[in-house]
Image (cartoon, rainbow, N blue to C red):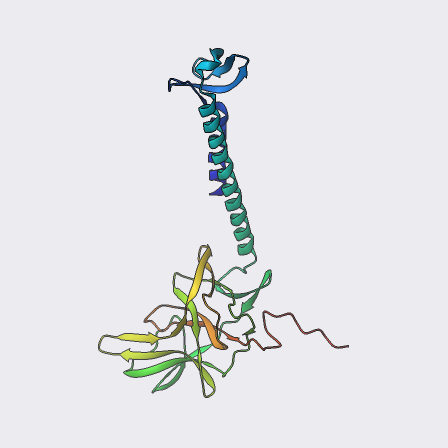
Length: 270
């Protein structure tokens, strides 16, 4: 896109350099490649006739000619600046994409690099017990309610930034986002489920966090909270609504954490 726009700019600049309207006081104009004032005459190179010609200076509207020429030049220069800025942004985005490991997954932004978050194993808890959640294998339909859970009260993936940034590379086109987890007993609830056997529907209830989404490449997004997080347990998730195939990458926002993924390592004691 940047290259194409730059080529358009070059063509526009060439057209500008080769086509100047030399206005006459009667409102007409000559299309000229260049012109110069020589005493009481104006010499110009006619684009139409391909030769040098002259006019009395008192017949030429030099002010209008100069004002329009300057305005056109200023517009082209402004467009050149915008194209340069866009090209710079595209290069920066391309460089940013290169630092994200290939393949599906979630990566925390840490300075100029990334830290890959391990996928958390989740379980479906219903009245019939607990079952490891398999993304490609739908859970048996039962009446009542259930929960999707991850083990442990606290994530080992701690961050101290109240608005952490993540890259998420999708395996297929799915819904994704950041949700808050609810610690309970020795596990954290990812989402609550309501099973409706008659319609064979499953209602999934999540505590979603409002986020910004920026597409970096095909299937690759950068996401971050729109507002500062409150201390607690969270997860980046990918899922198909109503299918209970949620994938979880858990983390905890702990502003007081000494060992956090996004903070400098503690210097070794000698």
